[in-house]
Length: 336
Image (tube, rainbow, N blue to C red; front, side):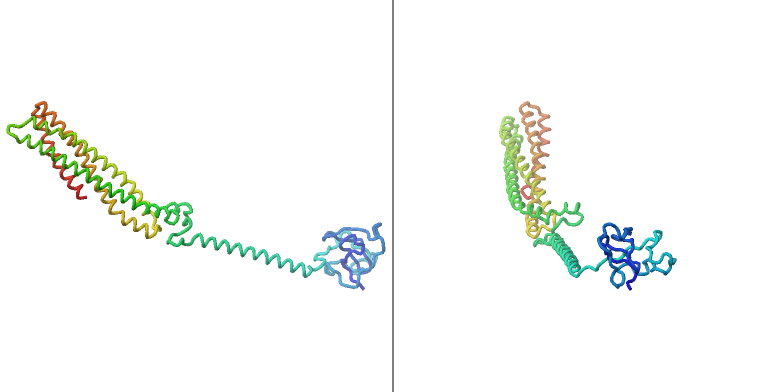
């Protein structure tokens, strides 16, 4: 005898229909939702056969309505479950997944896992390459929190520092030429100034003083002024080249990752840059001194022409003091 329970609906109108152990009932179920559909509806084309003698699919027998005569009044034996007690719908799957479907599921899982593994490997390679070495001891990447800050101090693995270092030899050569020009201009001005001073001293030492000879000495005043202008121009040119060389030197020293070639260029350029600093410093003082001397010599000449003895004597005293200063600066410049 077939047990009471849920079985495939013999009318095929629903997924399941309840068999009470003796006959099919009007209780049906679709997708776990119970409903009432009279078995002998007009849609039924033939009498429904009882289910095979097999245990019900779902739910377990303990959840099905009790069989007739057990727990029900005799008058209700064989009747459908009362409306107040809902017939439990099937709770489990109707059929087990087929083997092909299970295999397809495992294939999908394997493909997705393999794709994720490939992505992780690619990300690891890119991260390793980005944080590696460029072969010259340069550290790649943006360098830490640069990510907003430190990267601004390290310019792409020393590239900018190497570029600056490469410009140092040319600037060093320009500095060498500028130092030579400043020294030559200072040497020429020493000669012109000494000739002017010697002429003035001879005229003042004459007894009586030869005013006409003294005034004649100032014929060389124009040559002294021209020499002072040339001297000033040479020092200014040297100062401009020095300023560029100092900026370049600082850029070449700004990144420790610039490499050995940059370090060597910095070491070779540093002595010349330091010498140029001394020449520019002394040359600037010398140019200022020559400007003062030019004013003193002009006043001395004007006092001699006007016969202004007091003005003449004051100018001579200034000339002697400034002459000592100039001689000291000239010697320092030549030796620098």
